[in-house]
Picture (cartoon, rainbow, N blue to C red):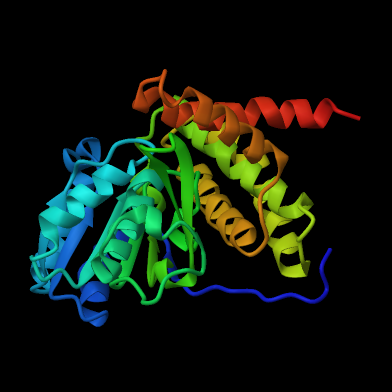
Length: 302
């Protein structure tokens, strides 16, 4: 454990049932005049998006909906979205969905303030300017991307996952509403929950762990171990959904201030080798199942 450390939490967090209805007020407080809502087609067809647009309408915040997000977002898709909207006077971003939507929002924001190609920005603390204010609204309990400074993008040239890691892309606000997760299918609940558990365990066990991340990691492990089986068994158990979303968020804060470990390293390496051979939608959950497999292998290794 490190006793000489620095801890960041650049994101304001609003947690609770119905919090998504505050999006209009919060967008206005951040100076939003025209927002780009980044989500996927599945969520765009649900009542969740309608709640957001109604709130924005009530506060007079204009918006455009971009719903072309695919699992494991690709650099070319982010760059295409940037080209499509760069002249629309967007001054606020809203990432709605799982990690793919939120990471895409961070990547598009990077292009809004830097231009060029995403591969020019891969790495740690390489950005020169902050992205436009970003509000993240998670609809799964997995990645914790609503409170992290990372954007993971698949590079179509190298065929590998790359990352932009910089406080300048951290969301300004996370609106974390457990009610948005009630309709998640069992398979997605289980897969994303195991991703969150892996984040918590690796944040706690990695070599750069520190006292604050240890406290958060242990708390996340406790929450997820108790409530993931309940959320999978009964998706409408709001108490389980609330604690799973909290566990995912807390794990995100923990690993964003430390690191991950061998499980993610092995999973990401195998994913990279499969990118050319597997459908994108399957690959999205492949990452989470790989985490579970390698977590079991690491557990049984002396």
